[in-house]
Image (cartoon, rainbow, N blue to C red):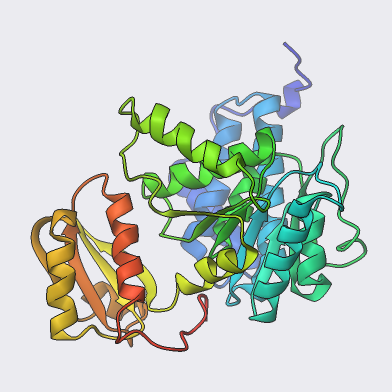
Length: 363
C-alpha cells in the first residue's frame, strides 16, 4: 500500500491531553477571528485532528480534504442567494438543441425565472445548458462535475462567478439538492436516474423536507410513464415501497404544468418542523373550522392517533425565531405515510382560505 508519510509526519502518541488540545483549538478559533458558530467550527477542527490521530490512510484524508473544500466553495457560491427560491433541473448531458426535450427544459426554466426563481443545474451541456439558457445567466447557478469524458462547463455560465466545480458526485448532489425548493427531472441516463432516485429516497425516508418533484417528458413521450409503471409494478408490487410512494411526484409532458407544480406547491404550505413524533406544518393562512373538519375526515388514515389540530408556535420555535408569525397545524403521522403527507399538502394548497399570492419559498 502506498505511504508517503515520513517519520516526522507520524503522530506523537504522547501528545497533548484532551483538555490542552481543546484549549489550543479555542485559541486558534479566536485568533482566526471566528465569532459565529464557534462550537461547530471547533467540532470540524477537532474531527480533522482526530483523523490524524487515527492513522487515517492518505487516500481517506484526500477524500475528506477535497470534500470539505468543495462544500466550502459551494456554500460560498450559494450564500448570496440563500433567501431566493431555487429550482434544480436535472437531465441528460447528451440532449441536442433540436430535441423537443431541450425546448421543454428551456421553457420551464424561463417561466420559473420570470417568476423570480433561480435555476440550478449541473452546469454541463444538454438539458443543463438548455435550462441555463432559458433562465439566463443572471438567474442561473451551476454545480459542475470534473469528468474525463462527455461533460464540459456550460457556455451560458462560462466566465461568470455563478458556478462551482466538483470532483465528487456525492458533494455535487448534496448541493444540487440542499439549496433548492423544487426539482424538475427530464429524461436521461445513469446520472439522471441516480439523481431522481436520490430525490425519491430522501423524501421517502424523511431526510429532506417535502418539495415538489416533477418528471417532465417530451410531448407524448413514454420515458417517465414507463418509469412510473416500473416503480408501481415492480417496486410497489413486490412490497419494496408503499403503493402511494409516487403520489408526491408529478408526471407530465407540459412545461407549463411543470412550472405550476413547482410554484403551486408553495401556495399555502410553507415549511415543517418535528416535535418528537408530532409534525407541525406552517401555513400561509389559517384553515377555517369547516376546512379543518374536512381535512380530518379526508386524512384520518394519515394520523397515528388523534387528528389534525391548530397549534401555536412551540417554545423551541419561539426560541429559534422559526416562522413564528405563521399559523400552524399539528398531527402525529403514521410511519411510511409520505404519499399521504403530500396529498395533505396539496389539499392545504387548494383550500379557499389559502393565499392568492403566496410568499415565495426562502423569503
